[in-house]
Image (cartoon, rainbow, N blue to C red; front, side, top):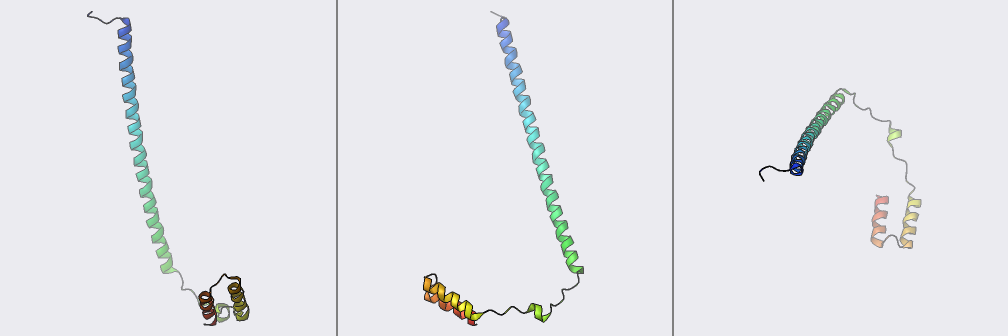
Amino acid sequence: MGRPGLIGLAARTAVVAGTATAVSGSMQRNQQNKAEQQAQAEAYQAQQQQAQIDAAAQAAAAQYAPPPQAAPAAAAAAPAVDLVAELQKLAGLKEAGVLSDDEFAAAKARLLA
């Protein structure tokens, strides 16, 4: 009764080996998780630094860029709106029930202003 038999010894060895494998696997997973978190933190820091560099470069470029020139008056003028056609469109929308009386009046006032 003092010594375990061959089967008991094999079972004990299997339990010890299984426990060692589980502990080893757990340690490897923890190390991988730490390495992955560190890599993500470094990537985030690099991204933030790059954003700061880009912002500084844009500010410097804007500082040394020539001022924009005024566009010619003919190009800056908005094309004339055909008021009659726009009013007819609004009237058609009102008749179709899409616009209420208040909406029609507001749109008409914007066109005539």
